[in-house]
Amino acid sequence: MTAAPLLSVQDLGVSFQLGDRVNEAAKHVTFDIAKGETVALVGESGSGKSVTALSILRLLPYPPAFHPTGRILFNGRDLLTLPDKELRELRGNRISMIFQEPMTSLNPLHTIGRQIAEMLKVHGGMKDADSRRRSIELLERVGIHDAAHRLDSFPHQLSGGQRQRVMIAMALANSPDLLIADEPTTAVDVTVQAQILELLADLKRETGMAMLFITHDLGVVRKIADRVHVMTKAEIVESGLPRDIFRSPQHPYTRHLLAAEPKGNPPPPKPDAPVVVKAEQLKIWFPIKRGVFRHTVGHIKAVDGVDVTIREGQTLGVVGESGSGKTTLGLAILRLISSEGRIVVLGNDLQGKSFRETRPFRRNMQIVFQDPYGSLSPRMSVSDIVAEGLQVHEPKLTLEERDARAAKALAEVGIDPALRHRYPHEFSGGQRQRIAVARAMVLEPRFVVLDEPTSALDMSVQAQVVDLFAELQRRHSLAYLFISHDLKVVRALANDIIVLRHGKVVEQGPAAQVFANPQADYTKALLAAALRMEAVADEEIANA
Image 1 (cartoon, rainbow, N blue to C red):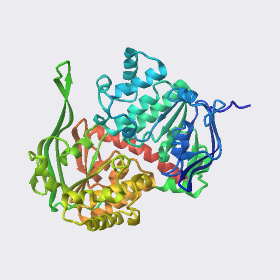
Image 2 (image 1 turned 120 degrees about the horizontal axis):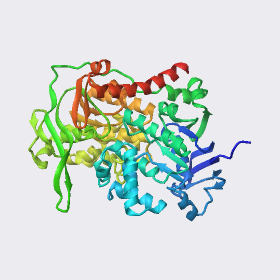
Image 3 (image 1 turned 180 degrees about the vertical axis):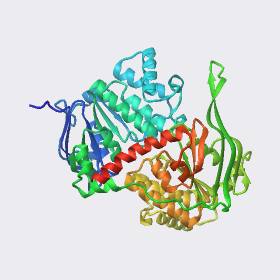
Image 4 (image 1 turned 45 degrees about the vertical axis):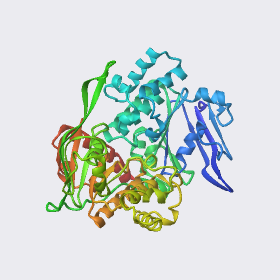
């Protein structure tokens, strides 16, 4: 006889009642997870992965969500019918979850130390001193440097990868029996991704913890999963051992996932093209304050003496691990945060100018943010979101003219203009990112900062968005500052690369040269980590 599974999902259905219409988000989903086993749910946005995972802890909005069929048994008890009090005792204690979007999952009003301690106090009954000590241990374990000082940081003071590591620390705080990991490596760079996967594997070995791992990245699945279930259109279409799924995929959708990755070659650089953006000796130092009187005792050197030159039609790729200063550099060039050094955009020196004096230049300087969920206002229609910049920079346009310009921008990025009166939550992650691109492009800018614009997207959607950026650049001779930890995407778009570490440039040069013959040890380590992941994927695709 085989032991009873820790978790058994049986014929689960998830539906949403929207007026007179019922949308099926998951249909007849069935799988088991044994103690100490890692099971992966793989699929693209909208496939039903996350709603299945959220159903386990009953975290969906009830109503409009409901379960027309199925049971979810945890140690023999049906979680769908469990009383609320008993379910609260399981949440965060015996079953924990790492959510996909750390910025929207962490409370922006509380320090990360307070949020981790809350888990330990509520579920573990720890006192203040013990919870602080345990919080430091957890942060160190997930790779947060200077953990004792970071406890006093707020979520907005951390990079996307650091916030994700904080979420993992919170989920692991009480040593759960089952960990639900919803895209836990999406927002982190390749080296940190390897560290997190290794960390989760070590914890699984040490504690016997079981894991439900949700992802769209089959390379990650190959490294961590014991069994794989592939989902599309709300159903599981293929199941099996990772080696069987990769070597001999049976379903066309599985073969589609294996083949999807960003491809393409950046346009050749034009040394005589006009300079759009130039930054010299850019510095952004954040003070570290201690004591009752908050004296400055040091600085976090987020960006320390960086030079940047970007020409028309060129893409400068900025790579480095989480916390290396990539996003801070982009925000400083756009004058969205204070900095020292010289910033010249289209021949205009912006350093020292006031906010009001900078405003006329902003229509030529736009940004596409990392998080397509958090960067769009949920209270505004897509048309209003895209046209908002026109109200500021072209106030003489009529309402009809603004709406027409918004419709044109949406059509250019592949969104049906007829949908422009809908709200962001009615679109998929890839569609929301296209809307964010339309918001930037409606002003016809000359320079765009792309801050990890593909990190939260599925592999096939990543490829589509990369193609979109390349097409927009060819059409409008755009200059891009492309910030990413995904070296495959950087290679497809960037002419030149700078590699940042702890705020300093450790290597820079033409992209082809840096990829083919890296000089700095840090660059070699980044490329080695990326190549290991690519080698796994290439091997499996070849076998398939």
